[in-house]
Length: 499
Image 1: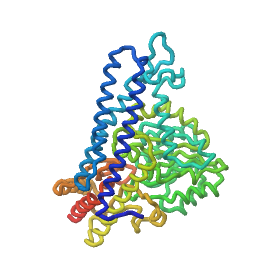
Image 2: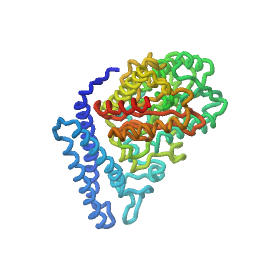
Image 3: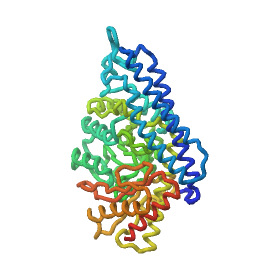
Image 4: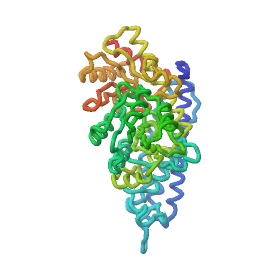
């Protein structure tokens, strides 16, 4: 992993963070500029008072955004000052992000009119609504179509001419993405014989797959590439469920390039691949390894939009499905009937997709996770700790995925602990979590206990605590802190682990 781990690199770290923030502010200001131009059309209003009250609100919010934006252009070399500017600017922006999203849709209707006698009830969708096509936003809306197109353009790689057949569908969460695909497969009777499922498939997804398809589901160990290919040959499954980077205690990172190349080059049967790509996001692109003229492979890849693609703001839940192959157009109807579409105002709470900045952010998160994991593993070895036996992260040489993960620029933003069996219980997990926050508080180091990953502040969480389909585990999700902050976070964990 080609990371710069120098503690004195904190200044360049923070300069990159401020560059990301400038983009996010510029993105929001551009959205306001576009919206304010639109709403100055007085034909949109039935009442002049609405116009008179709405314009000043927009101008006031824009003024606040501009004031905070100017703070990002200051030239400082003091790391503590830059950290404060970064954190306060993020907080200010994320507070405005959802307000502005509601503001941008304030004139619109969930059931916009397509004809009117005197005054329309379509808001900014005036003259764009077609009867029985886009006149009910629970089914489809123009706001979402815009996000889907931008997401595909920025975040999805697919060779020509196959790229024109790729579809993207915005939904209300990562789990909504999965349940939409799962219902499609079930209701289309897509699994008559077998489905293969990774042993470390996300536990909530695993519950649904197992209860829906029962004995037709055969598990496999994600790190055993040869066995996966063997099982595909033996069982000829109609569906393959797999996570690009599992959110589990063992964090397998499967060799998807080899598995998918086998499907593309040597497998002749029809198969549907359902890929949870939340853990890897745009750093893993499945389509170049799957598309071919044989047309025997259907892909449903999906990710949660409130992990990486919101750039740490965590404002709304959302998900995106990327589909390629046979009958994928039907998925639109399933999203409609299941009611899983991303709400129109949520569309505007998500920053405009930008590959350059998201790639930089992923590298920072991956570097911080790697450094913490590597440092804590060294601490375990030196101190010969008994309770915590090792750190689990795909970038470490003892991890089963290391043979193919060692060359990857991104290996995830979280890691877990291999804990001695004697201490694998809720009491130890909860004690570790509370000690971590207590030690961090005493040392005045910012840490939070909370779910999710890909945010700005490092988090500690007990995942799958009460699940029957997965072992609970302590997950550390690295943030985007500079190296100086990461050093202090490392010291917190070292103290807790040694206690």
